[in-house]
Image 1 (cartoon, rainbow over the protein chains, first blue to last red):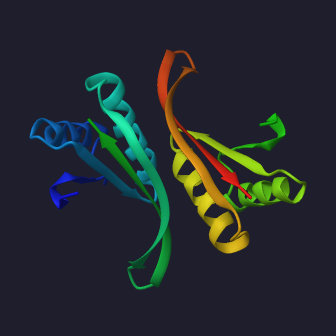
Image 2: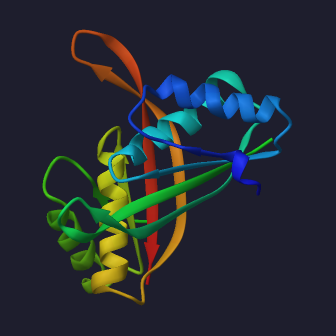
Length: 90
Length: 90
């Protein structure tokens, strides 16, 4: 999957990311990967569900993977954080 | 899967739920379902990852499903909320 087909979920409103995913599909992507870490994981699930249920009913969930990543917390050394990747497929 | 093999993730600390999952497996369950809605979804992923990586390396992720559920918000009528179910298997 090309890097352009990845949508990283951060602290913006859910709809910003929903729009980003829809734009990727409309630009010709056959798959879009939604990735999030920590508390943004809930938002990643919201984004996938809203895209599928409200805007693109022909989009399916191809796979969902969870993992643990090591991140550098400021001044605290490495910390572990959960991550999710939801791959949507048209 | 019997109802006793479901761990619902709420607002307690992550370790309470990790312990609940481990207890289910130690009581003979071959599968445990971890379920959460809304903001608790991130915690459900944490619970699954901590059980697997720190306590029970022989436990695998059998499946991960996301969905949308309708809940009654107080005084607001029905609202939609995202949900996750992570099934762990020994």
